[in-house]
Image (tube, rainbow, N blue to C red; front, top):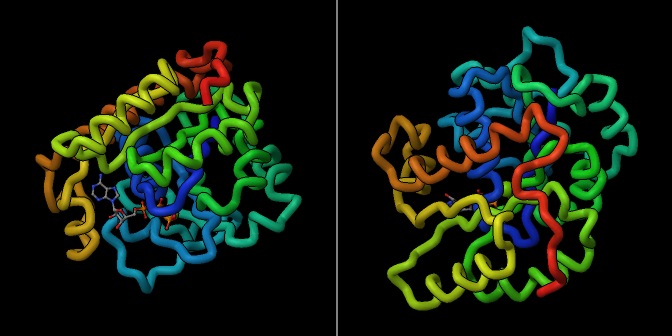
Length: 243
Ligand SMILES: Nc1ncnc2c1ncn2[C@@H]1O[C@H](COP(=O)(O)OP(=O)(O)OP(=O)(O)O)[C@@H](O)[C@H]1O
Ligand SMILES: [Mg+2]
């Protein structure tokens, strides 16, 4: 029952959007998926077409309290950042073992860097969602430096909300490609259907099945799937300290 940690260096880049759609993509591929939010202010349910009034049950809450959307188990553990028993608890629950059948996806807000690091040490993959904006790019050297080469061993980068019709978007994504190399596993195009689906309280797949962002994020889920039953991800290679 492996764990995928979604965490990026900057807020608002689409980390929660990617976590939700990774969960959906892996579920569509047949995995039994639990997705847990550790954010104090939680927007994860919105990507599943749920109303903001929904409070997700705790990770350890009984099955009869479960919130299930399309078979995906939505949970929360708000005290995770200060809960030193969180990682041992996940271990006890069996989430650190490779295997394709059951998967835990954790949505970690950008501000919770220490929690992210504790989790990434046990994850089969760390999905780092960034955008191609200069303020995000400016944070990458610091993020790379803090993680260290070992810490990046399980990291895959995703560029989200990319608009390559704009010069800055093209240049930013070229810079990330050069920096991340094979660790860049895909890009998700900017698509108004993403916020529109939230505004209409629908899943993106229902609101706009032909959405370009949906097809892009589905490809990301396909790229991540092989890491579930492997102890080393395909993109693992020595990283240079180009940052
Ligand atoms: N590909 C996309 N195209 C257009 N809008 C997007 C895309 N991905 C995400 N968004 C929008 O960007 C906003 C931020 O997304 P999201 O909440 O997933 O980011 P986050 O990194 O988790 O933010 P936070 O730091 O607040 O947790 C949302 O309004 C979402 O609808
Ligand atoms: Mg978020």
